[in-house]
Image (cartoon, rainbow, N blue to C red; front, side, top):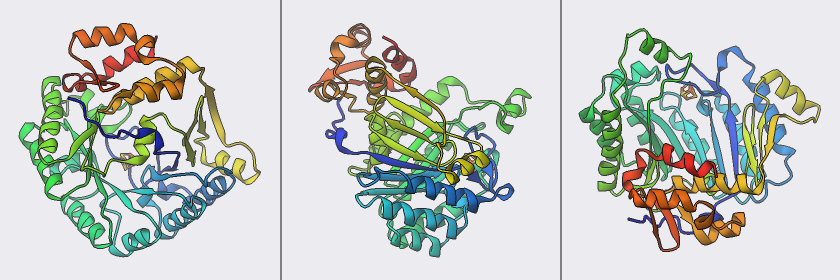
Amino acid sequence: MLNDYPSKSASVGPGLYIHVPFCRTKCNYCGFYSKPIAEYDAGAVVCAMIAEMERHESLESIKTIYIGGGSPSSLTQEHLLHLVNRAKLLCPAVEEFTVEINPGHINKALLSKLRSAGVNRLSIGAQSFIQRELDLLGRGHTVACIHKAVRQSRAAGFDNISLDLIFAVPGSDLNSWKHNLQAAIELTADHISTYNLTYEDNTPLSRDLAAGVIRSVDEDTDRAMYELAIDELTGADIIQYEISNFARKGFECKHNLNYWANGSYVGIGPGATSYLPGARSTNLTDFTRYCEMVRCGASTLEESETHNSLERACETAVLNLRRRCGIDLAEFRTRTGFNAMQLFAESIRKYQELGLIEKTGGRIFLTRQALGIADSILCDFALV
Ligand code: SF4
């Protein structure tokens, strides 16, 4: 059945993504680009990030800001607020301002200051409500910390709180995963993101897996956990609007909706990616070089690639199909110049016959049956 939100997905951007490349400690599963904060001059990097932001000419129209990482809450309160305040000032039209936080890093005073500074959405890295799982993941916070973080966030005035959850943690089963989902629902999360654990190369968890110290959850259980998340969250009126994301009506993440609409966004900070129609670029990851380039007014880009109109259309289709509302055929044509029904005729026919894609109301979208195997389906839209 068609989930009709968001019907006006074209108007949610542009966005500003600020990448804080630090964490206090490295989680056992983490393959993201982040460095231990104690080993670097974070203040110098934050100053360079602000300078990079200030030299952008086009921030007046920014609608969403997302400070992620890494772990933004690994910064000192002073550095984080400095970043928040400058971003808010430079983006007067912002409607949604999210900061990712680790439940073990925050306190009442910081939350109140973030709220007063204009942050109106928190993304809390809960990951699990089972202490054994948090320890195995190396999260460095407790279950009690998550409850406290949500309580204090609500008290500070945050009425839009997202929780991240990881499933298929070694030793977990459908019952323990249900416990995690129920705990997030009971905490009245407005938005929930669920991801299955992946074993990234050169992480403690992948080494333990290779050494036989831990066993991964089998594929069938992994899939069943995903299906359980859809059932449990939907049953609690937390609606799936993207393959891995669920929200109460009106609490969908606008920043990410812009991303799935293939809208423009500006990335700030070491390793951050920016996207303007037809061109994607990534900043230098090396802190020293990044700071030096900002200081002398030179380009901070490490790489950039341009996409022709066909590549752009394919990229748009793949991102749009991640949304439960799928591709709006009229909007797609306006944005890309292509007729999606013609461009992807073969794949659409094949997956319609298999019951994995549906066409209704001027849209094509993945059916529920397709969600668990979405990656393999989306590959066919990436290559025409
Ligand atoms: S907090 Fe996030 S970015 Fe930092 S180490 Fe853990 S998973 Fe990686």
